[in-house]
Length: 600
Image (cartoon, rainbow, N blue to C red; front, side):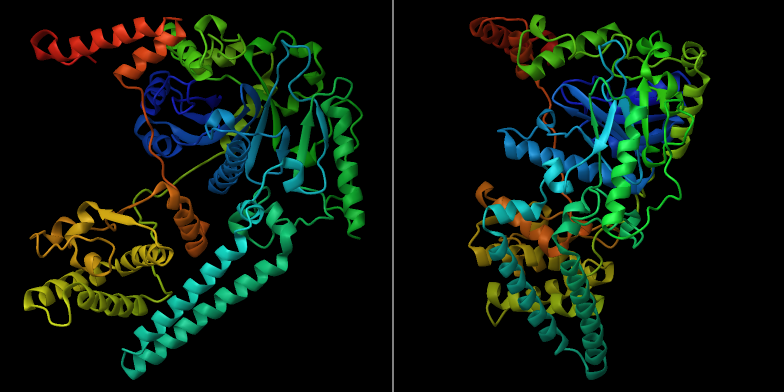
C-alpha cells in the first residue's frame, strides 16, 4: 500500500537510509513498497539489492517536483519503465542546469505536462484540503515534444554552441583511425584467420552503417520524441511520432471549470484529429464519450491515477473525484519514523532553503503522519473506500523491478571481434614497448609483457584495455593533459599503451595486484583530466560507445562535524562569531576529549 516512500536520497528532505526504510518495513510486516525519492534514483539499486534480505519485494519510481511543488509520481512497471523515468529525469535536471546556476535536484525543471510513458504508472496527488485539486484538467500538448516540454536533446545543446559539426568530424576521424588500426592488426594474422577476421569486420561495419542510415532517415522529429516515448527495448512496435502526429504529451493544468471527466473528451478528440491529418484511423474502435458518470473506461489515460491521502478522505465524497474512484489510489507517503525524525526533517528543509527554521513555509515540510504503519491500519482507515484499496493493490501487482548484480555489463569487444581485439592489443603494446624502452630491451621486459598479455587475453580483458587506450589517444590528439593512477600503474601493458606513466618494472610493482587469474571483472583504471577538458572527454565517450554502453557515476558528499555545526547555526539564526566559537570548542573536545575518544 506504500506507493510513495522517501529515503535520505531525497536530499534535504528524507531522513531514512535504505536499510532503515527496509528495517521499518520488515518490523511492520510490509511485503512490498515503492521507493520514490524526489527527483532522484540514487538509492534505487541498493534498495533493489537489499530488499529481498528483509523479505520485501521492491518497486521503484520517482517523485517529480518543481521546487517544492509536487508535479506527479512515476512508478516503473518494469525495467523499461525505470529507463523511461531516468531519461525523463535527466532531461529535467539538464534543463534546470541550463537555466540556473545550480544543477541540484531541487533545481530540476519539471513541466506541468505528463509525458506519454509506456511502462510507467503516473499518480497525481489530490489536494482536497486546498481550493482546487492539483490537477483537474486534461488537454493536448503543442507541436512537438521538444518545444512543448522545453526539454532539449544533447544534440540541440551542441547545435546551439556551434560545436556539433566539429565533434562529428572528430568522431569520423577517430573511426577512420580505428579502421586503419584494425586492418593493420588483421595483416598480422595467417591467411585463413585474416580472411575470417576481415569478413567479420566488414559485416560489423556494414551493420553499423545501415543503423546510421536508418537513424538519419528517421529525421529530427524522431529524435525529439525519443526521450519522451520509447518503446520496449526499442522494438519496432513503438510509436513513431513526427511533427504532424500528436506529441507524446498529456498536459494537466489547474482549471476550475473543467474536471478530469469532462475534459478527457478534449484529449480524445485531438487525438482523432491528428489521426485524420495522417489519413489513418484511430487505434481504438470507438472513443469513449464521458458524460460525468465515471463508468466509462479511460482508455487513453489508463496509466494515470489520482493519489488520495488520509487527510483527503473526509472531502472525497463531496469532490469532483467522487466519480473517479476507479482511477484513485491510496497515497500514504513515508518520510520519517517518529517525532525525532520529523524534527531532523524540518532542519534539513531549512538547510536546503538556506533560511531560518522559523521562516520555512508550512507547505515545504512533510506531514507528521508520513510514517509507516501496519497494513491493517491502512485498510481500517480506507475501509469506506474499498475501490481505492483494490486499485492500489492492482498498481502494486503490476510494478516489478529486477537487476542482475553479478554478471559483468562491460562491452565485450572493441572492434566487434575478440580475435581482432587480441591482435590489436598485441600490436599496440609492442609498439609501446619500443616507445618506452627503445628498439633493444631486456629479456625481463619481454617476459613481463608476454605474461601480462597472456593473462589479459585469457581473462577476456583486451577490449577493456583498448577502450582506455582509445580514450587517452583522443586526449593526446586534443592536447589534453591527463594522469593515470591507482593500481593500473602495476601493469606494463598499461604503461606501454600510455594509459599510465609509471614504469612498473623499474619500481618493481606486481601486476597481480592489478589483475590475477581469479579476477572475474575488469579492474579500474583511474584517469584524471583537467576540469576544462573533462566535459569534452565525457561527450566523446558517449559519442564513441553509445548510451547503451556508457554511464556516468557519482559520489555523494555528506555533512561532517564542522559542516553540521555551521549549517545548524545558520538555521537557528546564530551570528557567525558564535558559530565559529562552537566549531572551535567542538574541535577541542574532538582532539582532547576524555580517554582520547573522538566526538561523533
